[in-house]
Length: 597
Image 1: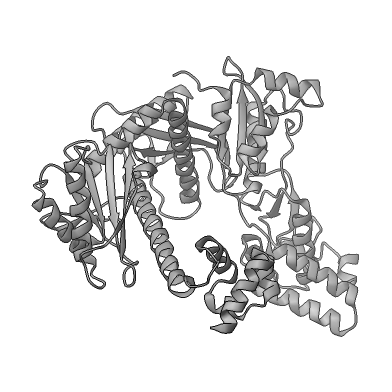
Image 2: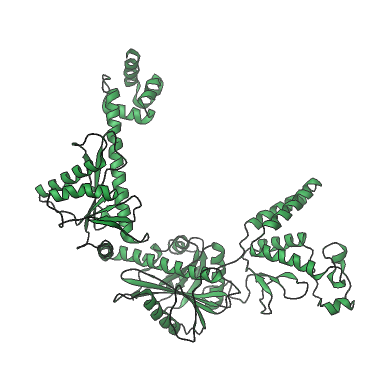
């Protein structure tokens, strides 16, 4: 498949946090970077001359831009680190070494130590992180130290060693930072209770601990130790913004592949994430053209076989959104919640973003193909005999009472055709009667089109559900148009569509493009109808109150009403206030008129 032009790839990037990857003409990776806003960051490479020759050379070599969307900027930072270490791009200098972001370790041993580390040892110890913000790590460790006196020594505190009196308490015990478990001065149960409290803090569950920190802060303040109280306050603020875990790196998930699928009428988009030692090290999205009515299950099975072969994947477990049959050697996991569900959601999110970008690119490069696709989709979704190239939508709801009016908006090829919009003053109906008004305006609209030999729409949409649809159908029958033009009614809930002679509504998928077009139609009909109604109401109110002022025209009065908001306020305004809006001579005429009347 031919790659879209670079400027087109940039134009359709999302405004989300994520990681971008630049590739050259041979498909070789050049650079990996992270961004708070992918579109802005990537665009900045191409809209200026850079200070360094190296960056300018890099920009000239870029042919393809790939990206992975993630939930937060912190996740982007971690994913960037993973990808640079795995892919070793030529133009990345930083992060190519074997250093990683730090973790907080709860060591698996009697009287567990809690410390900062960059190395993860598979010995049953618990690891929390990784942390991109060093200040956050040190603050958490400081707070833990202030609340829970734990040991810092590396002694083997086995029961036999303690009982034999092998160790002696150190300075940490004497200054109150440790309770001396090495000499048996602190029971193991009491110590582990503190470790459990710390574990909850590191998981992000620190409601109880925050109370303890606030008590400590208040104690300092009562003892007039304001500097210490302020330090605790600052640490509490950091803790309240603490992100306990990352979607990008999770030591509990080892070597697993994640696959997800998003599809429409013509194509399916399969996203794949490769996870090695708890870290995402690769992402790829595959577009598959649909040839027949293939199900998502069939397409995903085909894609998994192809991607596992292409990337030589050997993992024994894969995460997917629904059950599949891939043989006995592969474990299929369909997560419902927890860490694995989060990683599956991330994959689905990337598949959706990829689909949106492809559709945007298609809309820019080949708008006719984009329109044809939407028209074919609407014909299928709405069960129409032909594509609804010309749609008309009527609305006379919510604007009845005084000055009854109605609106007809026209869409051609799925877009508003504003020159064809029409307003209607309801003539034959006395009082607020929505149904009779609908019957009148539908009759007038299509009687005129028939008389003038104008083309009729393929679809008429009536806003207002079953009652309004029945009212419109009277006129359609009177004009002999039943069966020649499709007509449907939309209820207040929008996704409910009513068809003539069918009491059970059709429900559209809330995410479908058909529903988006219908929603756009109805919003336009509301906007257009309400604007006309307000103008008419304002004009009649204006005419009833100001038509008799000699020497003052309608335009001047409209300006004044827009400024003072009502005739009552205008009457109470001073000559100086009025003259600032319309000038001295006209202001005098208005003030004199209201004085004498």
